[in-house]
Amino acid sequence: MHSISEYQDGFLNYLESQKIVKEPKSLYEPIQYILSLGGKRIRPILTLMAAEIFDQEYKKALPAALAVEVFHNFSLVHDDIMDDAPLRRGKETVHEKWNINTGILSGDAMLILAYQYFEKYEPVIFQSLAKLFSKTALEVCEGQQWDVDFETRDDVTIPEYLKMIEYKTAVLVGAAMKMGAIIAETSVENGEAIYDFGLNLGIAFQLQDDYLDAFGNPETFGKQVGGDIIENKKTYLYLKTLQFATPEEKEQLLHLYSIQPTDNSEKINSVKEIFNHTGASKATQEAIREYTFKAFETLEKLNIGQDKKAVLKAFGENLMSRKV
Image (cartoon, rainbow, N blue to C red; front, side, top):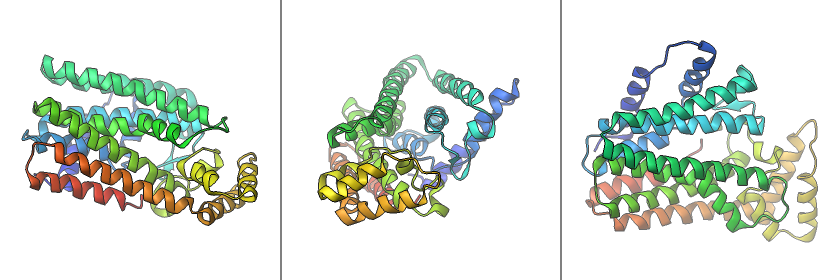
């Protein structure tokens, strides 16, 4: 097995080799820009790792890994437009640097480009990858719509929220891993188990993202801290707060989520204080651990060596303790 840094280097070299330099520049430059901003590259790394877990040379999975990364970044470009987000990974978002129309069109092009990378595989593998990708892409759209719908609903439940983040975030993590399994041509059972591992890890990852959005360090988080609070998003933190809050705390939280002040700093600080006081922040951290351990339980279903299971477990543990 290679190290995470070796997967990263291999992926970045491949990404650079696939750089698109063509006209119109106003379409392709934003694509290169968002892909060059870095980020954690978790999804493509998982595709490469999964291929090698099942005894395939990881370099064979590079086109699929890039497809996953391009699709993920496409969704970020459009999400940032919908959220009117000013920053992505500490830099200007595409629609801020260019304009909204460019963000929409460049994002559309990225979705098409993602599909094209699967054409590098033989027909049987191509068909399996494309089928999984289409299902996953549609689920991501469904998750995003639920996320938008929840902003104007006052009756969102925790199970509904967990389903939303499963579709919006976790299914792509699961699919990234299953793509590596498909390319390695391992058993159906292994493919399903590695998907479940990624799915649970993806839910834990998104819950961690929700937590860091409120309590992360602005210097390391890379996004606007408190963005979910400004947008009045019904995150796990918010829903757990409503569950635990006294009538007075609930009233205060609902009021804070009904206003849009010019300066959001006081609103953010007040909401975070309620999150902490009710125990919702602690409950969110416990949920992150719960879904991480659920992912670890699926490792027992994999027909691979204990050393490889240890690699996957270490990756999950590192993810759970991240600060960015």
